[in-house]
Length: 415
Image 1 (cartoon, helix red, strand yellow):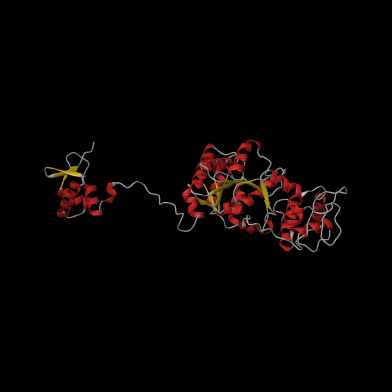
Image 2: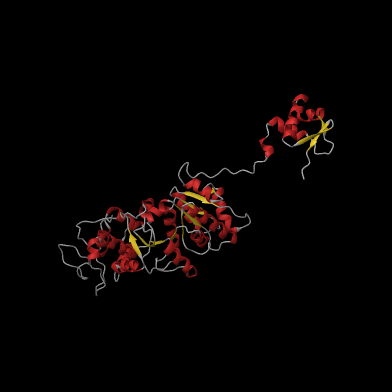
């Protein structure tokens, strides 16, 4: 349900006027320079205000986040525009001037229409589709999320796991990421990653290959295919899965936006798996954020000679990540207690493993020679009485392990 702020007809318009200001229409007062608000603005003022704030601030802006914790977005936009900001932690004149400098020319209605034309939507806290686990980010919680694709983000995130790693991955890393993601998708888990080259792309492709659901968290607008080399993959995710971003349509990525994007990946999912990461890999920031948010953090070991696995090994060695090798071990950590247990690993059970201890001791005493050995020698070797040894030898003979050859017992020779 969309949060209504103040009077049900309060509206924040955002069309640019000739003077370069942003008009706001409030009932009972004069219309702003942009004139009356549109019907969309009149029905959902909070959504329009948050769409505008996505342009005014960068993802994870804690100042705006603290502000939104105290005031509706409508009032935050009005305060920025008027410059009548009450005492607010972290907000100084320079930061306020930066927000105001971005105001001219912004048009949130056009952004909302643009994402709708792309088959998407803009979801905000209070919507039924909003994933409440993002609230764990506190003041760094997204102002809203632009998304295109199929399915409800909130429902998909309930059973999701992120698979991340190095862009310059090895063939081993790409293979493991694809296999893990395919196995997770076949178990009904949603694979989340960042649509970047390397491990991210392999994870998405693994889920898509088995008809699974995958979500890409982008560091650009959902209508911007970045990186270009993954344009077709991103298009497929938008059709078969979900694309989400904190940035409005048309926005391009930069280095800081990639790092900030990682916190959303970590918070959105039940756990994070790092497949390959060097010591300074950006994927480690996702793992650290997941750990700080009390999410399960997991790592896949690689060759000890590979620099691209050194960061993962350091995570595991420090206790910050749990070693996993397949989807069963991942789901055991992040799944329902008692329902997603990984099978116990063991070697094949041989018929000899099922023998009772005394029988096995006698069998071990029988030499692997053609002449074999008499009962007395076997008794000394096994440490059992001769009568019991003879009894066990006949049992072993019935099972096809040994045979009598005169006064001696020997192993049955198998072809």
